[in-house]
Image (cartoon, rainbow, N blue to C red):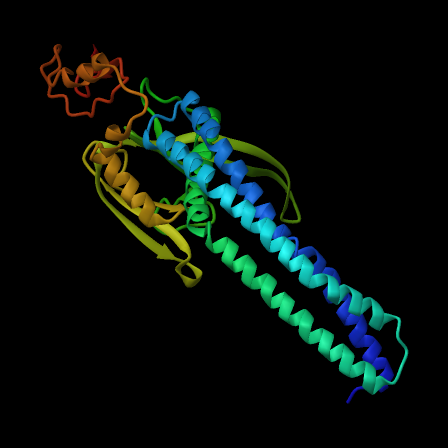
Length: 354
């Protein structure tokens, strides 16, 4: 049971109305929608520059990205004027509806009368405020609905570009070099589960997929000094732990473990001459996406999407690579990657120039 008197309850209701009024004064301007539109405008206008920067850094694939950026700009040029005009019309209409409520609430705040009389006035204004709040919410939903699909499409490409930008940054800091004409496809934070089951001391780092290789680079800070089990000094350990040509990927499967199966793993079975028979990697992206990436890389599907072409000379060098060692006549079984200048015979050690 309330300890307030009827008069105190009415004054409390009036203060609540004043608070609702302040909130409505911000909402009728549709500030959230305007901010969202401004962010969307910035994303669309800046997308071509982000893609150009990726090309400059060596990202060679998805030639359709430039077309997507152009399409987004054209679509937004058509959508934006109508959306902005509608926002202005809605803002004016909502503001007109707000003014009488502002006057009534200011008037109520200055009244000290019979609680029953004030109570009925407060309830009436409260009902009008709630109705206007409903109109504002309906207007926001309607406005968002006019560009929701477009916003979703732009957001997906933005998220993809962010992943590619992160990959290019990591590649620029990597302890290894890409081969000539080799280009990254995707990279992800990862843990190499060396015996198939992730352990506390398994190496953390980055898993890289290029059009020719799958590589894991350990990149983590390791404690070098502890006090009472707390690390007081650390050093960065960064080194390539293994690599394998994508041609040697025999089987790739997605697996989920952990709480509510939220941890994504990929399990890979490798062919002969690979560094391991199998690999298990915990990754911080959807495992199904990576299974698709790996299969497409092995099938050379990314080559069809190249925005940066490879010279015919480099392609021919791989095609004409020897299959037999000129020194010992041993069969050369190793995968010859584009960009290699030499290979070594596994039987006699002879270095063969390509």
